Length: 331
Ligand code: CP
Image (tube, rainbow, N blue to C red; front, side):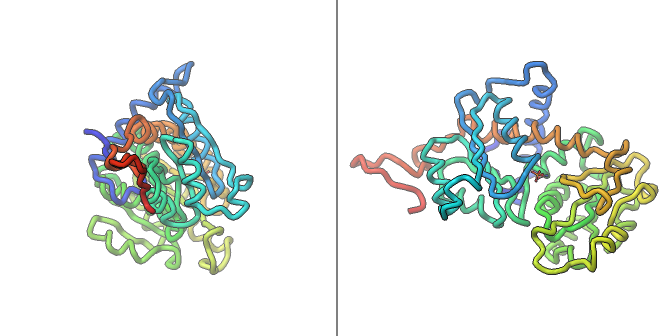
């Protein structure tokens, strides 16, 4: 199969075949990072721009490394020292970057839908590297790649996602991906932090559990999320201490899970709040394997979008007209 999309904006709109193709492509790239010379010429001559309006360690670095391992030129825009600080809008910033002919723009923004807006208005392929509380598709893909690596499959697994589900783009993308691929997903968190929209996924096997212990019962995979204090405009839990007591993961919780359970966390972790150090650093933890797999997934995404998936003249926003005039998309 081929991946015919121009952008990667979310998991929700992807088919099972598209997700599987992305994961299979990532698997073929995983080996590159294990070689002495960690580079292939797949995107030689292409340019990838990282445009991050929110803090990031893992995603931004791994997109940069992924581009470089594919031999693309990677450019990181430092938003605080860019002309955004002078009041330039997101769209104007993207259009000015696009005028420099990048082959892909990777965007992280606090506003849900920001990458979708750019995809409508710009020519370059857009990758959503996290938009507000909405989606984080490459995180869900790297999580799926990690589960496949350690469990051999996703179909039929019992997967518990625990924590601040409401504000988590990671949870949203993962719930869509894992239910599509046939996992039995349970989510658990304080009632104030589980979105009502998940009720529509109950038919696809999603279970909402108020208690961490019930979500973990028999689980093959436990995915822990941090409390996103930066996105909370009201007090959703009485205190961090109380949250840690009810939703912090400790070794004794895992006695309820499958004996072969694996523990995942997208990072950054808050030790002693949602996860104890014994678990984060323990033998069940795949937290750093997730980070490693992030490179392969982002190589696959960049490869599939930037390798020559150039718009046809009809799709292009700047298209030659009979009179030599140029017509711009979105204007
Ligand atoms: N998991 C994740 O998105 O981490 P960063 O915020 O460090 O990119």
